[in-house]
Image 1 (cartoon, rainbow, N blue to C red):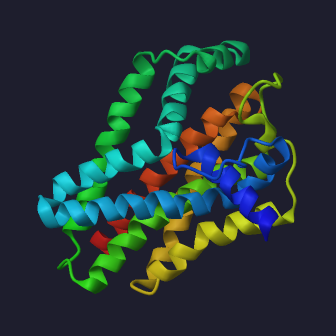
Image 2 (cartoon, rainbow, N blue to C red):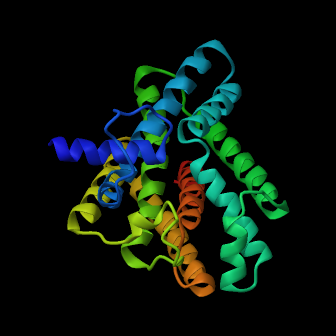
Amino acid sequence: MKKELHIFFTALQFYTRIPCPKNSDHNPDYLNKSSRYFPLIGWIVGGIAFGVFSLCHFLLTPDLAVLIAMIASILVTGAFHEDGFADVCDGFGGGWTKEKILLIMKDSAIGAYGAIGVVLLFLLKYQALSFLVSNVDEFTTKNEFLIFLLFVSGHSLSRLAAISIVFTHQYSREDASSKSKPIAQKHTWREVVGAFFFGLLPLLFLMCFQWQLFSVLVPVFIGRFFLARYFQKWIDGYTGDCLGATQQVCEILFYLSVIVLWKFI
């Protein structure tokens, strides 16, 4: 149990800005095993975002509450995944060879492709979340729990889609200095089972409200499939930035899929 807690805090320290015990570090072995808890980190980030939304919804308007909740989730993670998305937009938008793409993604400066991509990403996320929370009939206790599950499921399922690429594809960079490389070195059935358990559990609770919501898995994992194939085609695998981009895209796909279900089913 003590070892598992250490692994969990390693994941929490790596993927968020939340303070952790002093003995937590980026030990390569623990960091590799921490992939099993990546979707669980989504529970925490989604839960914090919902908490901020709930408070701001009481004090402000629903749209402002959504916007501030998005800001909270970015602050909690240090824009970890959004930065990866921007780097992928820049790298694949401006590079035509594996070496050039990887070099651009390594650059800390954001380019036109990244800036445009992030702006459109935030607009999509804001509009999708605003529609979802405004179409819950009344902000009663039951519907509050539904919104909570939407926040948590979006974060956990998208993180499952991202980390699952580690289980099926090879890491692209050869340099050992990359901070994400320890995650890609090896995995066991514990990492796979843990990731799927924590990634899918919130969706199972969400299905208690509407059983058809299981179908959101289809667009999310279709998106994951095509992203992984695209990365494989151009850079022979994936990088940490690719995982961050996958998380962001799949989170958007989750929200859009729920909107489609609510409109047509």
